[in-house]
Amino acid sequence: MNDAPTACLLIIGDEILSGRTQDANLKFFGERLGATGIRLKEARVIPDVPGVIIATLNTCRALYTYVFTTGGIGPTHDDITTACVAEAFGRKVIRHPEAVKRLVAYYGHMPNEARLKMAETPDGPDVSLIENRATAAPGFRIENVFVMAGIPSIARAMFEAAAPNLTGGDPVFSNHVDAEVREGDIAAELTAIQGRYPHVSIGSYPFMREGKPCVSIVARATDKAAIMASLGEVAQVMSAKGAVPVMETLF
Image (cartoon, rainbow, N blue to C red; front, side):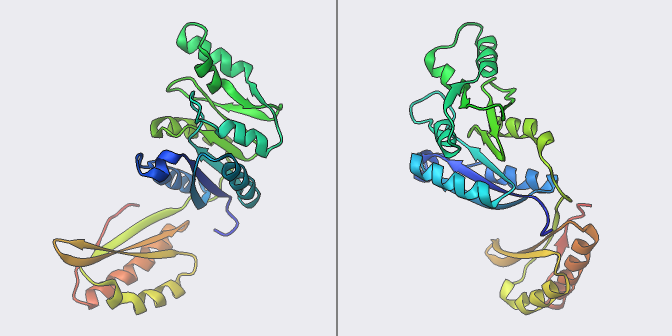
């Protein structure tokens, strides 16, 4: 798993940080990238501040195989992601001819200046458009950076359009076992189980059900057999504590 391609998600927008808008993209990107064999190693929520966007992008694109950004490529004055990406790469902002063509075809007439803003990309022959089947306004790719809309349905459509161009590794699978038991009561045994399965990531997530303490133990790995074996041991520990473990059969 350590040799797998890696990714970072940059969630851009003051509206996310203010709490007015709840992000719905992180869960999708984590799951889809994992299924593609790309490990989402980090996600950052950053404001609509040019210096922050540029510095964060330059840091992350040097650290990870891929960087995905969501938000800030719409038609309004506060949509500044494209300009920031261009500056991060030392490029100029242009109106991409193909993007203009798509917007004109979609709107049935020459778009106004605000809509044409959505046709802007950094210049350079290595910049490619990311198709948007929802509204025709595309995202774009520059080197290892994929710039996408923040609206979840559009971000997902853009990701699916870009996915064939991603180089992944072995997909990551997961399963879990839940029981009415305090996680502190099985912590020592979990540590021992994790030691026996170094290639399985085992996480403990407590929750309450009908006022009673419960825990969900989640195992993630590229090896389905190792997942099931490790969770089988967890279930035995839960049973020994007098609990009734419940595990889904996902594969």
